[in-house]
Image (cartoon, rainbow, N blue to C red; front, side, top):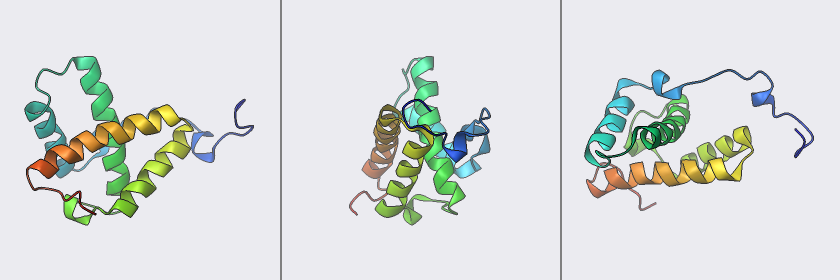
Amino acid sequence: MFIYGQISPVNAFPRRFFPFKELDTAWLTLIEDFFSSARPDCPDSTLKEMRNSISHVLYALQGKGITGFSEITYHTLREVCDYEAQVHQSERILKRYLCESSQFFGYYSEYGKCDLSG
């Protein structure tokens, strides 16, 4: 509030939210597979932070009715990241979400499960 002079409407009534618990089974399975295959030695604290970032992005995509990689476009993903930046009003959080989500999508791209070309 001191920085922007206002409270974002989405933050006016804060509550603790765990998007990981709200994800569809298909997204949860992909997250679990990602961490067991790509990050098997990840420390618990890093795992929780990364899982939270990825879950926020996937939950926002899920909220737009997207149920799989084939439905994700750059425009939609950018919309989601812009929304997350607005909600948190933090460049650091936005960069974290982008970095950790790009690792997730990049991992699945290597196996042909999602297309990062456009």
